[in-house]
Length: 227
Image (cartoon, rainbow, N blue to C red):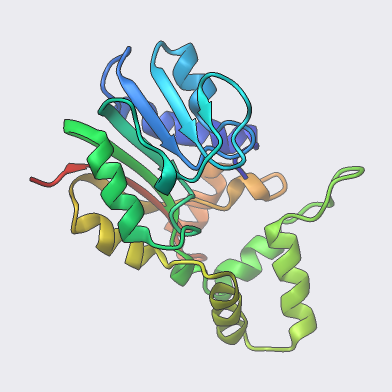
């Protein structure tokens, strides 16, 4: 999802106002093979670095797990976009993020609350999937739509097996671990799925949330290190 222009635009629109002014040092955890928000940070004058085993080659990137990375100096902000629900130990990564921040530094966290991905939300999402382009593989929503249909299971059972099988952490655990280490500045649930849907904008997803048709599965959080 990180390569979708709509997703990059939405995450940047949220993250940018939360950051200290450039040229502050900003570290992105789990920037992915496309580089995440690092190119936009660099273009905006930040001293930005992305850490990910699959990060692109280049001066601004470190091809290593965050748990193995040692920042050369404290940074003004740490950004983590849809990376914490994949890590082995959420608390360890958050401890390292806090240690990487200078006093008063900012954590910007955008995550998926998988426990809110209930059957109405899944059906709404699956009904808005377009056909992949030529040579493109199915995305995660296509894959789970098809696997659920083939499984014959009730949605709660399928979802539980999917999350356990992939070792994905629920959003409530991520927020609980974050709350033990950071002081919340802003936090809300909002859109998350729109970038993977066909002809569906962030505003369309928010309208469905507001109408009670689906759950808000995105977590949009900003905090500072707790003293």
